[in-house]
Figure 1 (cartoon, one colour):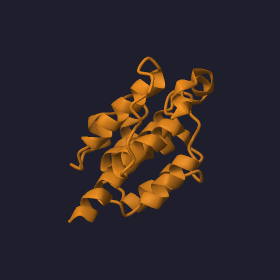
Figure 2 (cartoon, rainbow, N blue to C red):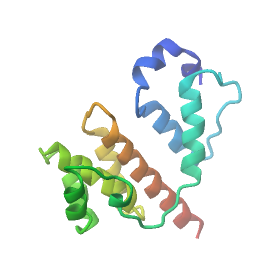
Figure 3 (tube, one colour):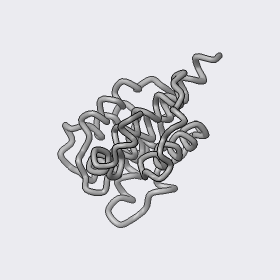
Length: 160
């Protein structure tokens, strides 16, 4: 975990949704991996990592509508339209073939709140790899949340 103690390397790579932190949250929540105890608590990335692990471990698989949490002019009608689609169609809309950025982001939000199992886990990881580079990081954050939900479902399924 030396990387977390080297702030100049982390700072430019861990703005908004950091792939390094995302990967370690996956390992910290869904594998036997344990975080080292010598992490520098004063580094923002360490705070983010620990907070994200705590949040991901408590994630609910209760079905929810993205429109309950995401609202605003321009996105409301897109969310309502996309929420009626099957998840496979939503995944396609969230993908790089969709040129309309607003539709892609809305589809990512629907995946964030509507992913209830691990059926499309590989596709969600692919979306994270080919993510839309929006300046706010909202798209990638929504995809990460959908992956956490899918991984949670897979973990529950493997324990049954």
